[in-house]
Image 1 (cartoon, helix red, strand yellow):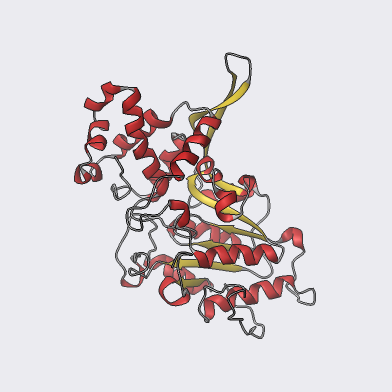
Image 2 (cartoon, rainbow, N blue to C red):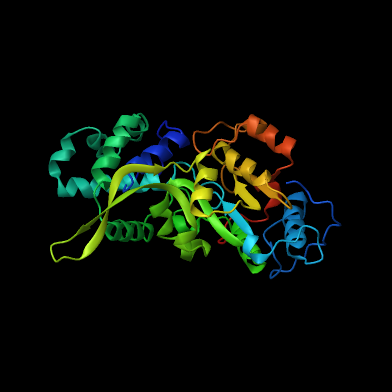
Length: 352
């Protein structure tokens, strides 16, 4: 059964931690503004004219113009991006959670006895109300049973196969088609101007690495995510391989994001993009550096084209991608740019 239209009552931080415990599971620059181009081939073509688009253009101009006091050598140009809710859709439930729940039917086919055991029985029933009431312990049980002990190559192949067929319940499109076109343009624009783009996600690092190159143009070695341990061993023919283990190495959410950035990248970003309270510390860490800085948050305020949730600015509350009033206040205080999906983007997806 497909469970992608479910929203179990769990918060992002706890979920990110458990996904990896069971891993198989701006300040506006004081420069004269650039007149943005509007032709289809111009940078940021899916962005409406406004402060958000101009902030990106000004930042790139200041950091790449050798005559600028804020010029950055190419090796220092680092930009980090949250994934869920910043680069692709995170509602009604995180994509990786959907993947894990969908694997229950595969597991039950291999172990029929699970069909009568909770919480597998509930997941297999298709009863959405009952599934929404599953506890964190229930989810941990599901994650452990479906994902623990898989060799790395087997996990990667399984995720790829799932992404090739699984579709979002609202748009009936592959999840990899539900990336935000304006953000894809930002990635491309920064790379064109010598920036190295990284993903810094609370989701599973190995999960995102399966598709990051083809979907975002970001190679797997530039994905920083919540990560679990692996164990080296040999198969029956003596070939070495790695098995994923339920051992937490990094919970790449909240304070874990700057920690992971330091461990995996070794440089403080000059630009950081997020959308929720889980990205706060990454933006704070980015903004604490010297020189030109760009910190941006995507606000989901477009229920017609995507979703509307906050609860900042009177939007509905959400357990996924929570954007609180406190975060909004900090953005205003620190000069971070809040991107309005409704007002700043003239389209959300490529297929529009």
